Length: 377
Image (cartoon, rainbow, N blue to C red; front, side):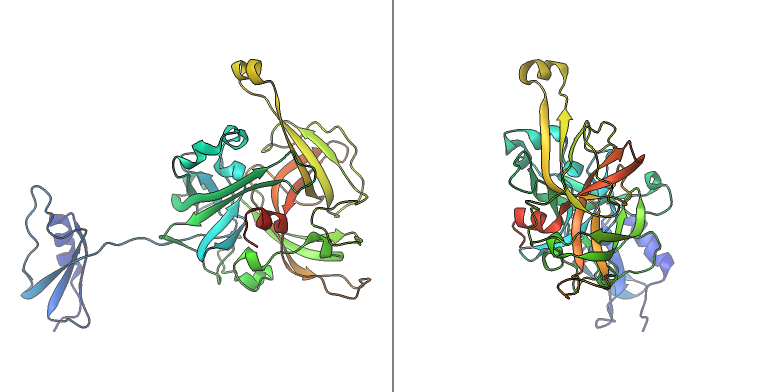
């Protein structure tokens, strides 16, 4: 009794029947050949009925189709379907029992949509999101795959009493999955489990770090679409209290720049020379509308408050959405004698160019503030 179908016979069947999706001998029904089709009873014009026998064996018709499953990882390229701009998948969250991921809202929506007073347009249709797996060094030659759709977003700004947020939650499609044992796309093509990012599980809901709790020096890992994989040591000040809004802290920086996704060239304030130390930063973006819109409404400013400034982190266009993970405590002495926690610290949303030091720096939103705003913790 045969246990498999010769490839030549399968090839002939596929060429004769366009709706045939699979052919095999079931291990528990070895007397019949299983023919799977997209829908029983539908025969394309010009084609014949499925054969009742093949090589002397009876056939059995069932409905079913084949779907290619795509693994999605932290560091993958993310973009709105049909868009030519891209960002980075920062990390995974669990939303009402479903798997989803986080990236920047400005990655999956254009600025006009985000700043519009009426959000009705966002809910008229699904915003579909695609991702790219790096098949080679040239991302443009890598295929785009369907990741899912935007379930929720937060683009809250102009309130100096809160931490501003630029965030989107994308629910994974049924054909796309996350693997906790291979969660990071660091371009090495070697599996990296969640433990590599010092997390106890794959979801940021349970693995975030409050910046105010960190003291001394920690090791961080992150991977961006453009900058790639990096590791950095980060030194924190010995803050007086635990507050993810960073109120009453001695450091502050107000920045002005023209484009959220581009490197900043115009800085109107001085940057304290304190390398490797994240501290509170506020910035504003000038959006220049089209000429006819400008005559009606004038200029529009977006002001973000209570962000983190990361001095020695590489950040380039396309890295928006990159999450920074604290993976190791490197502090030899801490005043309260407690070890530093590990997990996701923040998400990178913008960069600026320091003309005095002639280098780019990174602005990031604390992960706790993001999760709170989205109702995920």
